[in-house]
Length: 195
Image (cartoon, rainbow, N blue to C red; front, side):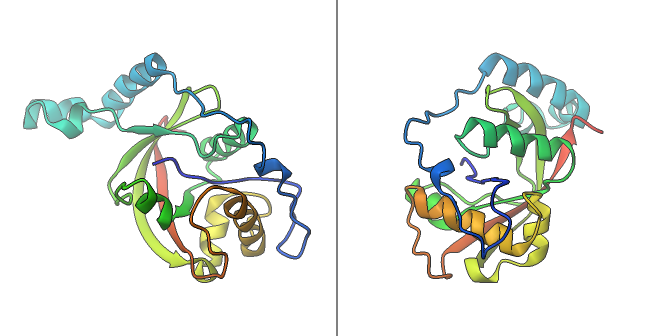
């Protein structure tokens, strides 16, 4: 499931006029992931995290040999790169998406213990992520700590609400916008490459 996050530095707070032009470009195409680079990155990651040792102990276990899901945080190239960079810098340690997106595409919610590979706008892998926690909140109950952990803009809750409200309002999803929309909060850490 691609997490749909946004980062638009021109929006300083919830009270500011939110420009959605950044989100309304219907010409944006899906970012194509680079399969060869992903496979090389996964093989290096597996060695780093010791997954090869799991294969010896467990046999050809699916977890030890199957490459995790790869994704970009958004289909907007500049934003995908900006968010991937925040992950590498250690400023972005969480992400959020709408629960209705998972339901719409009949996909399971992420779970603690999941691995995933975040990519840049060129489809190249930048980090292997380990999901530490998944919590579902109504939009109006997302805590300030989560907004800070997303690492975007000024890291305030008002910024987080403004930018996500603008994005989800323009995005083709089941967004009611009344504060009750369920948001899937996913806390993660980078396990490869190490800093």
